[in-house]
Image 1 (tube, helix red, strand yellow):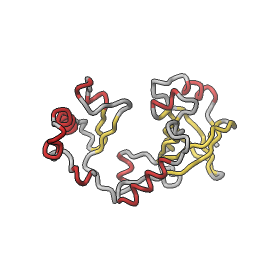
Image 2: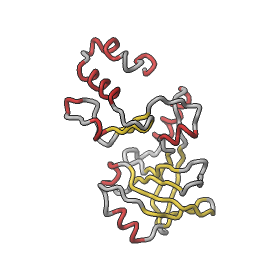
Image 3: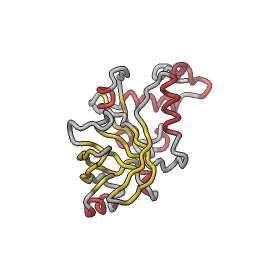
Image 4: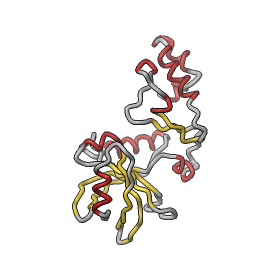
Length: 199
């Protein structure tokens, strides 16, 4: 059960393209938690159901999570692909994340079935030391991996770890993707990507 002052909720809905936060009370298993909500995922903002980023006040953990995405899964009507892929990743030894379904209500009105997804950001790796990470880059909505389409690195990507805002290695990799002939893929990209391990 989530409660947001009506005027704050209207303000949130009226700002599809601007990041706007709304303070909210989350009632989970009979306990009240203070949090902020903001629209998450540009694609969902043009659908009937929006997805949200939820961040609890400092020091609050819900199912050991300080924040999560409340995902409407607008591209997956089955609502099971995220859980399925995460289970496969976990079995294969890749990074996995907490995810579970919830039915939630907003100001007394049912919002339907959503999926809670643990956010993979810099805090994720602090909580999960079993996953060492050298670099973490967030990909923006509608980003491409080709300079041929007028890509501007700093508009489409953001370095999260380390916080030096350097995208030079990524830029070199994308340039190599553009310039390497298909028949030379393994030799041309091996400086940037362990293709055998990736596959």
